[in-house]
Every structure is written in structure tokens, then in C-alpha cells.
Amino acid sequence: MISFFKGAVRELKHVVWPTRKETQKYFLSVLVILILFGVYLFVANTAFSELLFFLKG
Image (tube, rainbow, N blue to C red; front, side, top):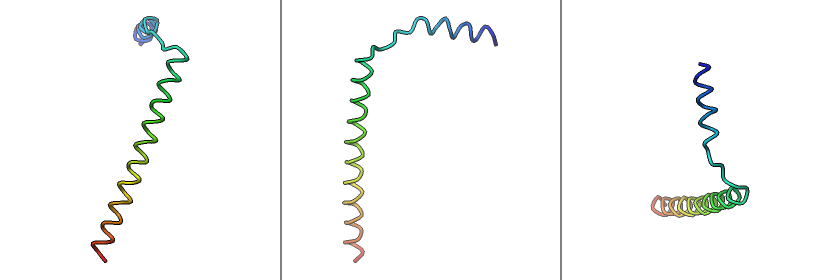
């Protein structure tokens, strides 16, 4: 168990972490994509619901 944690720490030293600017850029990209996908799902759900109500009534 101890060797596992030693190996994990050793591997973490090899990781190249993104800069603060890169992290902000990636975060903004993910946020925009999530918002656009949410709007798309809302519009698709509303249109599908209206279609079902139209066909039912």
C-alpha cells in the first residue's frame, strides 16, 4: 500500500499542469458549450412537447 502511494506521488511529479490562463480559457469554453447545449435541450423539449399536445388535442 505504501509503495502504491509512493508511485502515485512520483507520477504526479511528471504531470505538466496547465497555467492559470489556460485553465480559465478551458473553463470558459466548457461553460459556453454547457449553456448552448442547455438552450438546445430546452428548445427541443419545448418543441417536442408542443408537437405532442398538438397531436393529442
